[in-house]
Image (cartoon, rainbow, N blue to C red; front, top):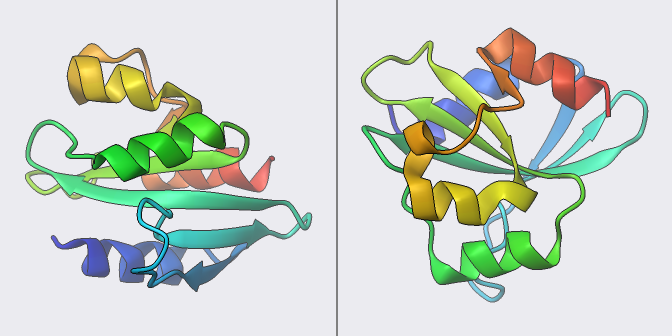
Length: 121
């Protein structure tokens, strides 16, 4: 699964969230999606599809270190497409330093559970 396919999958499944895909080469590190839930809460999502550890650029790390509130990293396994985990952006250094399996538990696991967290913001 590619990040593009991952985006299409969540956009189709998550009807309670509005998505704007950010294609930005000027502001490196900007997350992939600007989102709004039905309550009107805005948040960002960085999408990652991985076989193991998450690859994050220094610009992505910097963005999440500076913007710790309502920023999230949504990680899908390319080996098991049903394995989806949601991490807060504030824990990006933990993900970089310890990897996805060494970091503490995600906020949610599975597409439905991840959506529930984001809808509840």
